Image (cartoon, rainbow, N blue to C red; front, side):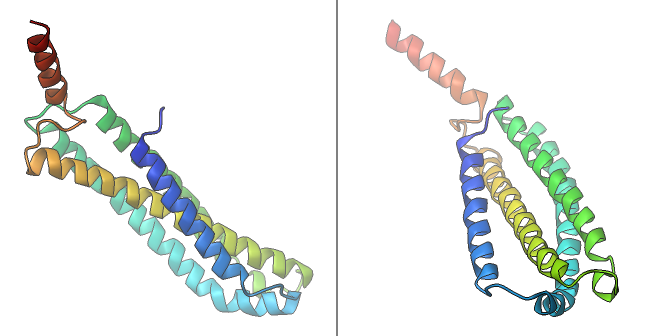
Length: 185
C-alpha cells in the first residue's frame, strides 16, 4: 500500500513527538537499580492510566471510522479509492495502537516492584523499557490522530463545503478530462 503525502506528514509529526518525549524522559540521567525501582513504583499508576486511555481512545476512533465510512458513501460526490485506502491505513494503525496499548496495560499490571526475586539491576532496564514503550505508543496515537484530522478536513471540504474539484473526488477527474477535450478541439 502506498503512503500518501498526508500520511508521511503524520508519521513525521509522530516521529517529532517521539523524539521530544524520549528526550524529556532521558534527561533524568542514569539511574541505579534502587532509584529505578522507586521511580517505577511511582510511575506505574500513570502508565496504566495512559494505556487505559489509549485503549479507550483507539476503540472510539475505530467506531467513529464506521460513521466516517457511512458519511463518505452517502455523499453526492464520488470519492476516489485513495480516500478509502487512507481510512484503511488509519484503521490498521489504530488497531495496532489498540492491541499494543492493551498488551502494555496488562504487562504494567504485573506486580514487578513487589517481587523480592527480581535482581536490583533489572529495574533500570524495566524502567527505561517502560519509558520507551509508553513514548512509542503515545507517538503512534499522535500519528493516528493526525491522519484522522487530515481525513476529517477532506470530508468537510467535499461533503460540507461541496468542493467538487477536490483531489479525492472523481468529479475533479471528469472536469479535468472535459477541460482537456475542449482544449484539444
